[in-house]
Amino acid sequence: SFGLTVKETVGYVYQRLRAEIFGNQSDTGSISHIFFVFGASGDLAKKKIYPTLWSLYRDELLPEHIRFIGYARSEITIEKIFENAAKYMKVKENEHEKYEKFVKINSYIAGSYDNGQDFENLNIEANKLSKQDSAHRLFYLALPPSVYESVTELISKYCRPKSPGWLRLIVEKPFGKDLTSSNKLSLHLKKFFTEEEIYRIDHYLGKEMVQNIIVLRFANQILSRVWNRDSIATVSIIFKEDIGTQGRGGYFDEFGIIRDVIQNHLMQILSIIAMEKPRSTKGEDIRDEKVKLLRSVVPIKLEDVVIGQYIGDKDSTDVEHQQGYLDDKGVPKDSTTPTYAQVVLKINNERWAGVPFILRAGKALSEKKAEVRIQFHDTPGKIFDTESHPNTTLARDELVIRVQPNEAIYLKINTKQPGKMSFNIEETELDLTYGERYKDIQLPDAYERLILDVFMGSKINFVRSDELQEAWRILDPILAEIDKKKIPTIPYTFGSPGIQQAFDIAAKYGYIFR
Ligand code: NDP
Ligand code: BG6
Image 1 (tube, rainbow, N blue to C red):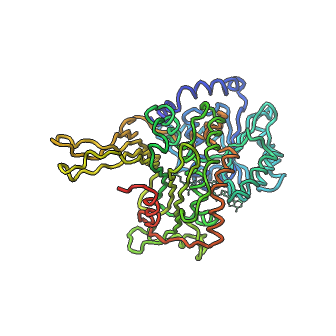
Image 2: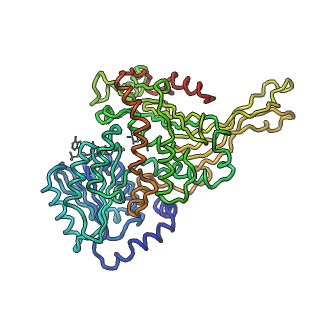
Image 3: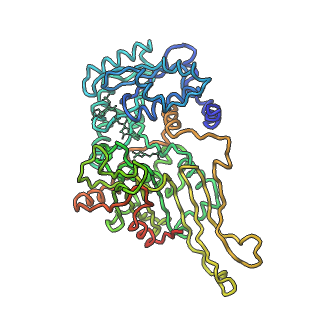
């Protein structure tokens, strides 16, 4: 079943650690952990957080004596929250009893985001659950960033557990809107929490293929030898969605695709693809290398940036495709916010000098896909395209890491056309498609892994404040220039493959389309 395989996938190591960490609490029967969902009435809570908590509970991966408290301003009930989330919860026929138990250990409290009294009340309610007031407390901020500051301050002031209980704060992106606001938020958090206590979530770090990059790179001699400018011509990190902003336009318009996806998800992938080998797989060692790499990224030139905004496809039979970005509710009619962007980054170090890193992200395109494409240099010393085999062209080798959908790693190489008597060449793949190779394994959702990591106190897959600062340092000047010069976005049609000018720049940098 799904449950068992996730448990197996997460592995026995986790089971062992769980016993070590949570084990001694079970005996007393008192509540050992309280998980708070701030913004419990919202979209993320409904689609991701509650369904994830249910999956982890169902698979018995959480501490036994845990309680969940939802918090938001709306005067609603926990039943209503579960009703709204029902279609995202995977509850099988034989799991209803367990699901009811899960619902029973959830509660909801309504209160403001800026009134100390409300947080005091929340603390009183939480204390009622655990006699010693020392249950560990995890706070998930599924809230708009506008209320982060007041909420975090009040959590720290009123809702800290008593010793030896620990506190962990999970902060959702966006972490600021630019370098200044991000630094301001970091400084604010620093006033009330230790870095130890803060978990900045970037859910791409919870995806199987993103986690696999480190193994792929550092556990395979054959790859580590070629992972540099001598062998690699271009690296592309691509994010495509086949949906528009779907009513999230109000949030999106303030940020745009560079802040929404490139600054975080794609920069995280970039840093893992390009960093040096860490001293160990410890969180701090990995994050040190990521920061070091980001520090070597040189400022982006405006000529290397393309931005676009989708327009409706009037001829489409799909109603969603007929709507342009400007038709989304909450988006001002004259908005110039990009829903598509490509930036070319350069890394000034010995490994990567001269290799373009092409980062491209777009909404409302022809397909949903996230992948890394590494193109190797052309094979030197041509011996195949001679007069006797005139149709032979030699394609570049290319390694593709497909993050989603259908996780895969494949290497495009040239092979002799099977059965042919001469050296006719064709392109083929060494193909590790997970769905084929690991048929029985159900990969856990990114949020499941990351929330588990928080319980375990593992920071590998969370963003450190200096990483964040560096990612903003790289993108800040270009974002400011786009705003200042009012660079117009190029329109592209909903459902199209993207923007030609972006492809032309990628080609100019040596990326070969095929
Ligand atoms: P919502 O807009 O649904 O907000 C969550 C809750 O916050 C709402 O239910 C509402 O609760 C309260 N709220 C909304 N607007 C305001 C406001 N202006 N002032 C005060 N409170 C407000 O957000 P999401 O759930 O979509 O997102 C939460 C966080 O997660 C954001 O930081 C977002 O960027 C991030 N995120 C969201 C994703 C998604 O798919 N939704 C994906 C990745 C990240 P009430 O009125 O009851 O207090
Ligand atoms: C979020 C962005 O962080 O990631 C969304 O805010 C985007 O705009 C989403 O749709 C994509 O996540 P995934 O996991 O569906 O690729």
